Length: 157
Image (cartoon, rainbow, N blue to C red):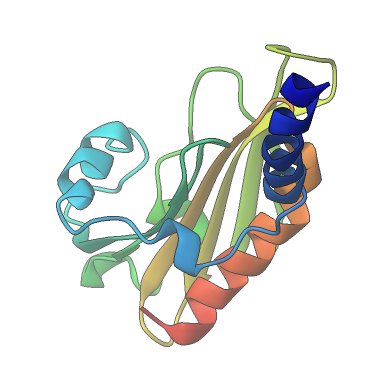
């Protein structure tokens, strides 16, 4: 009985953490991580991009938000010219004037998972904001991740 009582605080902490909402402050990356992220996402960055910024991450879920400044020669072009379309099975999921989303199904831990690249262009500051999320079993966090993505764009960092 005493052994079971010892585990109750641990169980309470685990339940609390599993129901916890993601916040912007929880995932601010170190400044040094930008160089690593540039390597990771070089396959989607347009040539001559400028001012890459790593904004937010959640490594448990594998969700990353970053942005880069569009080269002046591409500013007046359509959104499709402001990034390189991700390969490896991604399909167009949403297309609007300043927003394009690509997804692919993933089956690592279930049937409803997906990887997503979300590209949203902000013409006021000439930045492309990008969300990459690998949501194999964590799809319940998707709406919260989108809130954080929108927060990043709003505070214009």
